[in-house]
Image (cartoon, rainbow, N blue to C red; front, side, top):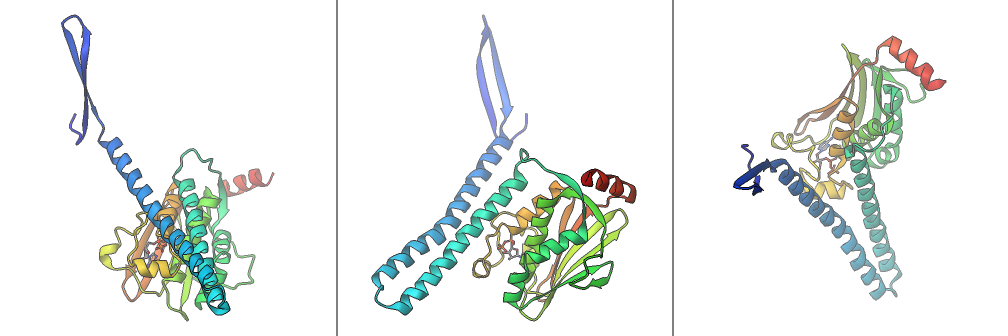
Length: 281
Ligand code: ADP
């Protein structure tokens, strides 16, 4: 037994007979420590907006004669409550993709339809940020109104994959300056379907690239918070994609932008028809 942490148990098992049991509890210790870190992080994330709300509410009650001040502080309370709600939703998403007990429902899905759904979920954010959203299929632009275009098919859990794409597109918008565009590029290559979310934003420093998929890791804490980030979007995306049998990778260069690539096994034409018929019937 060569673990870092060993549990030793010894006792008599018979007359003049003693036994020593050694068990390797390194993994257990690691999980316990990860769980503690997670709880500490969550508490910190919840405490910040909750504390701000309470302070702002106190300020309002002191300034109740001044309508402008009341309106200003009320707006800030709304913002902080939205942050709390967003964090809770993200925690639920994270729990869902990490919990093996959650029932998955793998079905054959059209990647272009999924990309459209994820784009739709980000339309307001893109409009507010002045960022354009473009969808390309096999190198050709798909117009907004074109509902007949079909892309490659994959077998995946719809909720997990849509959530992953939604988070990647949301980040691409949040970390891009206005008047730039985010492209969602769908194509099949060999046996894989590739979905790339490409932005021309600020990019990610090289030394941070290995850590961005960790829960609560942010390159720039203040920037992430200011744009409504929870530090969980990429962890959720990665777990979600991997749970569907795919991979999520990143290319990024500071000042040039970032490309996140989801790669999933392609469903062959025959399987696709069979599965569609089962699904439809
Ligand atoms: P957050 O809610 O902070 O965006 P994420 O888990 O989604 O958390 O991302 C982790 C960190 O990775 C972010 O804080 C940001 O620094 C960086 N990041 C993610 N996506 C992008 C992107 N498209 N462009 C630049 N930086 C990004």
